[in-house]
Structures are given as structure tokens and as C-alpha cells.
Image (cartoon, rainbow, N blue to C red):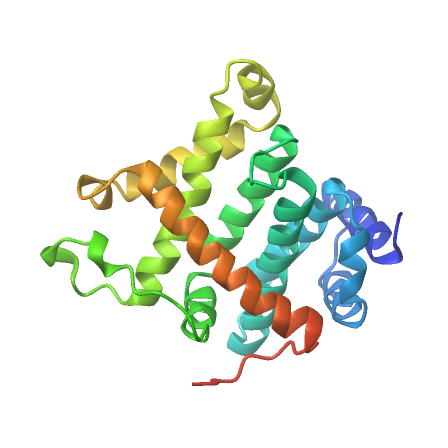
Length: 234
């Protein structure tokens, strides 16, 4: 079922393609999203991609720390909701591979454009895990939030590379989502020192655990409590 929020996202992405997207219209979408957040449960894959892209645009424009905190959390949650509920089966296997890769790509870009913001959000998760067991002594200056964040990014990158290389779909991925392969490859290469201590398969598993914790935390905060500010709760 098409929602007004979904239609607005689609319209604004079309504006962006024609270089007509304005800061005012972007922030109108931000406040419409806050006021109608539960509309996302009616989104289709294209709505999730469009909404995620708009939050990514906002991150590139916004400098205020508190606003970026809200933008990054909302964008992350919307993309994750789409990944979890529209592209995966009940045991977590992708059933819409191109949409899965497309949503992972946008979420990975969002992660990379909101590092400090999402690390702060991770720190607020009561049940977060310290994953520094995967780091060598030379890297003991990593905080648990940085380690968790890196696992999330490597997990998304690893999944893109893994499923993008499925022979039946590889030609379509290269045609439609070459950008996804490129950014995934860059993230894996940039973090190659970490992979001397483990494997990308292990990072996919560990990253999914952090994604799940962050998703559950934001599900309660954004959808249940309808709270869009992130004061320190520790």
C-alpha cells in the first residue's frame, strides 16, 4: 500500500535526479518522517531505497551534531527495516537479491558518512558487546564502539561481495549495482589489517550481531517510544 511518506520520498528522489532537490524539501521530508514514522511498515523496496538516499543527502548537508544523530539513526533504521522485512526470508537468506544489495549499499554509504554519530548511538545500547578479541595488540587503542562499527561496515561489504558474486545474478549486479561492488571492495581493502586476525566470513557474523542489537535498540526508541533525540542515557 502506497503511503504519503513513500510518495514524497519518490518525488524528492526524482527531483534530485533533475538537480531540483532543495534543502527545504529535504528537511520537510525529515520532519514528515518523524511525524509519520510508522508509515515505513507499508513501504516497498523502492520506498526504502529512496528514503535511505534522502537521509544520506541530509547527512552530507547537516553539521549540527544533535541533528546528525537523529538523521543517522532514522536513516539507518529505515534501511535496516527494509533489509530485514522486504528482502530476507525467515532465516535471513536474501529472497530479493538485487534489492538486498541495493539497500545494503545505501546503508553502507550511510555508515561511512555518519561514523561518529552511529558510534555514539552504539555506545548507548545497554547490551552492546565488546568485540576487541578480534584486534591485535597493535590495535588496542580501538574502542568497543569503533570495533562494533567496523564490524557492521565489514559485514555489509562482505554480504554485498558474497551475494553479488552469485553466478546467476552477477551480470545484473554489474549492470545495476556496480557502485555497490566498488564501495564494498574499498571497505574490505581499507580494513585489510583487521582481516589478518580473522576472516571476512567471521566479520559478517559479528557485524550482523551488532546490526541486530542496534536495530532492536532503535526499534524501541524510534517506533515504540517515538523519541528522536539522543541525549546520553548512560
